[in-house]
Amino acid sequence: MKILVVDDSKIARMGVIKSLKDVQPKAELFQATNGHEAVEIFKKERPDVVFLDLTMPVMDGYEALKKIIEIDKEAQIIIVSADIQSEAKHRVLVAGAKNMYPKPINGEIMMRIFEQDLLL
Amino acid sequence: MKVKILNSEFNEDQIDALREFMNVSIGAATANLANLLDAFGTMHIPEIEICNSNELADKIESTIDLESMYYATKQLFTGKFGGECMFVISEDSARNLGRHLYNITVPSGDEINDAVIELTNILTSTIVSRLTQELSTQVQFFVPSLQFIDANSIIHDEDVAEYSKIIIISTILDFQDQQINGNIYILTKDEAIESLKVLIDKKIEEIYGLLKLNIPTCYWTHLKMVT
Image (tube, rainbow over all chains, first blue to last red; front, top):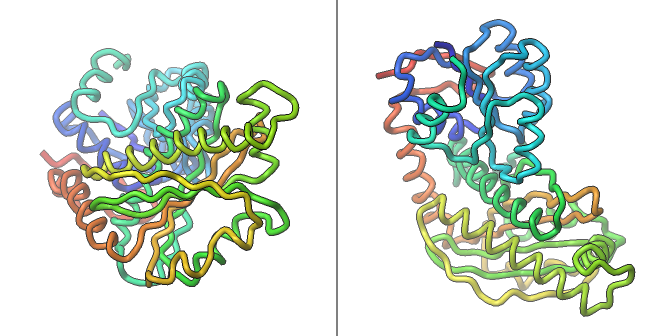
């Protein structure tokens, strides 16, 4: 399984990767530090799952979400963000994300994501 | 990311972690304010800057309009991570805040003051509490002070005279539809720097240590999970 982790913060990306360790131990992981990189990697690698931050430089998560869904409307995208406003969640769900979780996520939440949110 | 490091107090990983913890804290505060204002706030990436204390006033003045009057609230907090949280909001934004909170066209001076203090209380307590939660420590808050002042008077030399280095963590409060914008600064001073580094290193070890991965910080990379 290919998984793309997108966040401008290294420690935030590592937090997601750490929580994936028990749930998807053999996953092939890709990292991007902004939305533009995420879209380019998505085009090239077609990951099965994308974990996407919202507040990023160059291209934010809202724009990246839109572009990835344009490429593949079935893309399995989970938003992981510090923005915990209900309006933000509403926007990303309307745009095609499978669900949205507040930072930081842990192994228990990651388990739930793979069991309940993703169509794999 | 705008990071200006004037000394070697923090390495790249420590700055990244501090900025991310601050990002999570700002997110919690923005959500609380969104509930208060029944509005949507746009989040901005926090800036981390380490500067000499005599540069603080210049830094703050560079982010605001020097011709405007401002409400500036300052709240001290002490503990392993001690410092001062300062919120600066322009006269126009404060008036818009008063209008929005009280649903009136022309709020009085007292109503504006109350609105700014209410917003500040939610903002500073949420940000600092969430930040210290991320760092697994606790702080004690002191009563905030409110001033209505011009841009040049926000920081006086005597405020920072006893300190040599100051860490500025700053971001923007942005409720654009309501035309309410403000600047938030968390100022931590000499004695807090070492304990802050220890707290950050502990969190980094918690996350990086288990992975045993050396992740390049270059453009992008991919890796196989180590099991």
